[in-house]
Image (cartoon, rainbow, N blue to C red; front, side):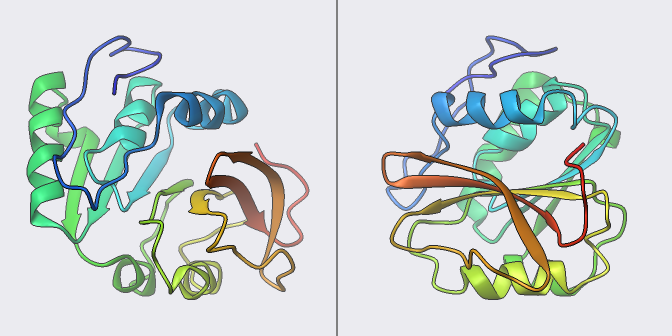
Length: 187
């Protein structure tokens, strides 16, 4: 696992030895950030289910103003902190929150431009989490949400609150880009 582009390009990241953690592959991460292009630049990003920080650290490398890392696992947060130290990321560019995703989303965190979600493949409340986020004040008309989910754990394709603007399958994973229903543009 490595940073693909930007300020920290080529730097290796440590991953957890836990079999419960499935980091986003470089191929999938490259696809996500190729679609996003410069969307993350100067934006506030929430990396939910951050694990080792793979997606959020990529966003920082590509110019995100700040990343809020959210994970409920102490082991994941320990690996994330090692990666942050290794990359020497200034404290003002990140925040680490140990909390479950639905509780975080329910708190209506303000000012987030980009949500990166990489839940475990077996995560039954995936639709509940999306509903909470899109019904909260956390999502604005200009916010974008990217979620990697397992084919056997799909999200609703039709929703009153969001629309799928792009999807692609990689093996067992589906990468979905969502924004609020009624939003005409992705960037």
